[in-house]
Structure formats: structure tokens, C-alpha cells
Amino acid sequence: MKKLLFLILSGLVLTFVVFSSTLAQEAAKPEEAPAEKKAAAAEKPKAEFAKAETISGTLQMVAADKKIVVLTDSAGTPFNFKVTGATRIKVAGKKAKLDELASQTNKAASVKFLPTRSGNVAQSIEIGQ
Image 1 (cartoon, rainbow, N blue to C red):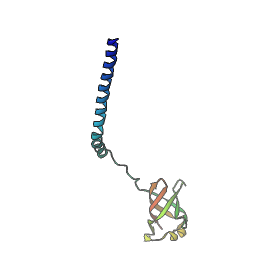
Image 2: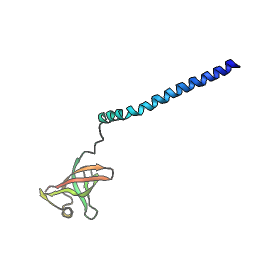
Image 3: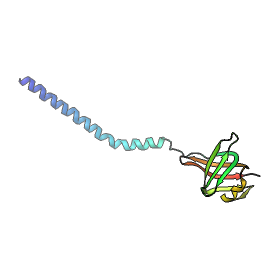
Image 4: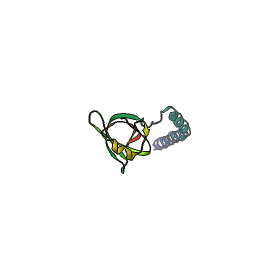
């Protein structure tokens, strides 16, 4: 009986020692973790924004009140573009306003835009004559 009690007590002490040393090792890890995270963040490339694209085609529609321009490519696929205050608009090489584009439908056009989750945002619109 004494031997059994001694073995159980020894097992509990051994378990306590192993458990406390494991906790001590885990407590030391968070101190190293921020330095490791900083190093990993420095090596990891940052997410890039979408790159500007350019498309050429025919100006099909201008909805000045909604600030939307629709351009169709050579395959006939329509593309919608949001026009902002920063959008540069040129007609025959001269600056123009969105309202002036309505008279330019069915003409060759080129749009430089940024694709976003909320839609394509026009950076520049050029209408050639």
C-alpha cells in the first residue's frame, strides 16, 4: 500500500514538474513572437491595389445623371465605367465635361480605368475624331 501511494504521489509530482515547465516555455514564446511577426511582415509583400487598365472601343451610352459611361469593345461586349470628379475627359484632344460626351456616342473611345470591387472607375476618357 505504501509503495502504491508512493508511486501515485511520484507520478503527480512528475506531472506537475512537466506541466509547469511546459507553461514556462509557452510564457517565453510571446516575447519572441512580436519580433518574429515584424520580421515576417517585412518579408511578406504588401497587397497591391489593382493596376490601371486601358480598353478601346465605341462609346455606346453616357448617363451623366448617374455618372456612368458605357463602352463596347470590338467583340461587342459592353463595359460600364463610373466617372468621378478626378476623371480626365478629352474630346479631339481638348478637355471636355461629362455632359459633352452625350453627343459623342458611336465614336471611337479609349478608357483608362481601375477595376474595383464596386465597379470600374474611369481615370481618363479620350474620344478621337
